Image (tube, rainbow, N blue to C red; front, side, top):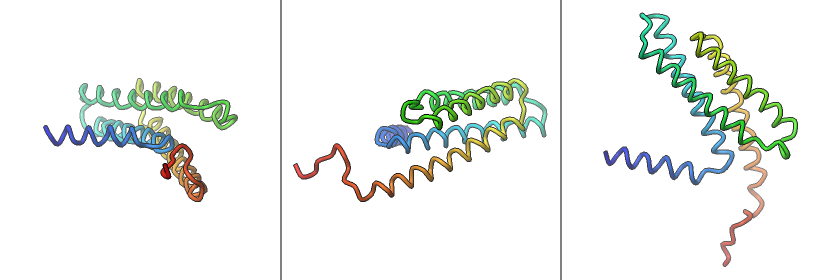
Length: 148
């Protein structure tokens, strides 16, 4: 019980202290993790007898991914992001539609495609965030005055 509380406190602190870029990566990580889980369960259903409880778990994992994608959509800044934000919005919309249809049909291929693209986007965000962090390393941090 104490371990569970400590883990929850750690996760909460990690989220509260994360930069915007780190939060985006966390969202992508969780979306990929959920799709990996759904793919694992779908594969089990293909090999073994379809289990209604497993089908429900698959659905929950896919819906959780859709919720994460929706969160990514609402976090887009169209004024600063311009065409990139518009293109990401269109891609996220397509992801959610694909996942909706894949969930209904229990379609392994569609989920695999979305998972692959989410993984690629995640890796791109990691590169962009790392590049921006290294470029800003020589500049003083705005908003913090350690001199007093």
